[in-house]
Image (tube, rainbow, N blue to C red; front, top):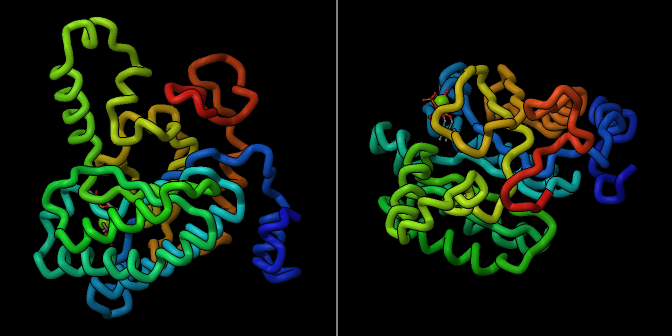
Length: 268
Ligand code: IPE
Ligand code: IPE
Ligand code: MG
C-alpha cells in the first residue's frame, strides 16, 4: 500500500478493501467538490441549519487529508457561492465565521502537510476579517508543493467568465483577435490550475449551481445522495473507483490513455 496511507485505514476494514481497488497511477489530478446538504442534514436531526455547516467542516478536514495522502494534486471546494448571499443574514454570518475559524485552526495542518491554499471567486463583499485570514494562510503556504487546496469563496462561474471577458477587453485589439480557449483559460481565476477531472456533488442534486462552468467541460461527475456532513474517506474512495471505470473520450472515439484532460495550462 501507498506509504502515506499506512496507518490511515483500519486493517481488514471496508475502507482498506476500497483503497486496494484504487489505481494510484490513474488518479484524477484535480478533484472538485460541491459540498451540499448541510442544511438538510441538520433539519433531519432537528438541529439548526448552522449545525450542519459546523459538522460539514469536519468532512472538509477529512477530505483534505485523504486527498493529500492519496496523491491528488488539486482539490477545489465550493465553500460559498455568490448566490449564497441570498440566505438569511444569520446563516451567511455564520458561514463566514466558520471559514475564519477553519483558517485560524487549520493553518498548522496545511503547513505540516505541505499543502498550498489558493482561492477563486470575487474579492469584494467578503468580510475583512476573513480576507485577512485568507491572505495570511495563502502567504504562509505559498511555497508548498504536495497539493493545492482551492477554496471557492464568493464564487460564481458566470461572474468569473464575465470578469475574464472584461479583463480581455481592457487589453489591446490583438488580444481579442488572437483569443483561443487556452488564452481565455489564463484569464480565469483558475489560470494556474488544470481543469477538474472529477466533480463530486453531495446531497443528490443533479445540478452544477454555477460552479466552474468553463472548467468542467469534460469533468466526470459523481453524485451521491449523502449529505456533506456524512461524507467520509470511504465515499471518496468509492468515487475514485467509479471514476477509474469511466472511459473518457473527450469527443474522440477512443479512450484517452491517461484518464485526464489535456488542456490549456499544459500541466497534465
Ligand atoms: C451546503 O449546504 C453549504 C453551502 C451552500 C454553504 P447547504 O446549506 O446548501 O444545505 P442544503 O442544501 O440547504 O441542505
Ligand atoms: C452550491 O450549493 C453552493 C455551495 C456548495 C457553496 P447550493 O445549496 O447553494 O446550491 P443550490 O441552491 O441548491 O443550487
Ligand atoms: Mg444546498
